Length: 268
Ligand code: SAH
Image 1 (cartoon, rainbow, N blue to C red):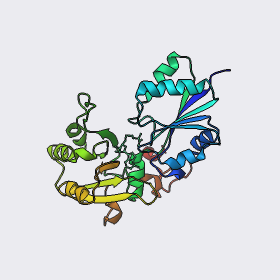
Image 2: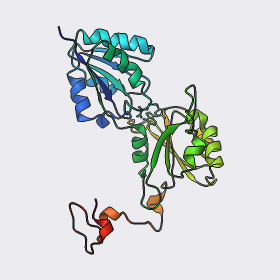
Image 3: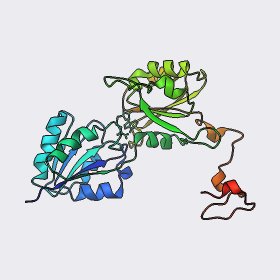
Image 4: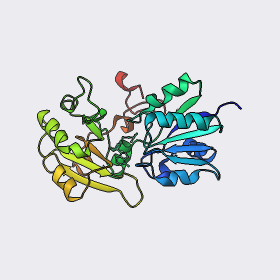
């Protein structure tokens, strides 16, 4: 029998409805699923067909996972490795795919809604805003995994753009220290969302650089949380706002001719 294909599927942030249509289809036709138990809502595995082999990866090493996937691919046409959010973000993707490539086993990745997007959506906030920030940095602070040179949070925060900080809720004091050192004001708004999109379990904490740590402690938020620091936070309530050029009446793009055309506004 030809070996099957292994699909690294982004499960999204927790709400099973945030799985992509392609991810859902693959789960429904899979012969085996290896899922990241600590964060992926079990509901996703409810889509598995009868007889599907389902295994939680939380007590496995990377080598054990590769061996398991390898073995299942010799028995089933479709094998799914279900990962939280998007598989390409802090998902040990390449460590798992390299042994598969070496063994000649086909694999592919299906992207997922990352928790940064889910956290911002849950709070009704935006990652970018015209004339405020047009840049988003997805990062973390050093834990057991060190940060490469030039990627310490203080340097990244010096851009004063949107920062989505993964894997760092227990290191909030480090986040505060870095933002202060980069010149963020004590009243700069900070958002923390725990279990973004999880039905009935999501917690949204709004604070400032000065008080976000105490607020998280008071709410007992110390795991599975996204930290967002951004000059856009709270903009839904601002009195004035620069308008998006894309919807400006004078802006011409591929689908709409603007009222007054200038040389600079012809690219969508
Ligand atoms: N690949 C995942 C990230 C895995 S790292 C993604 O794209 O989202 C695990 C970290 O992701 C956690 O420490 C937390 O910071 C964040 N995270 C994952 N799911 C989350 C959720 N539902 N709500 C808030 N943060 C979440």
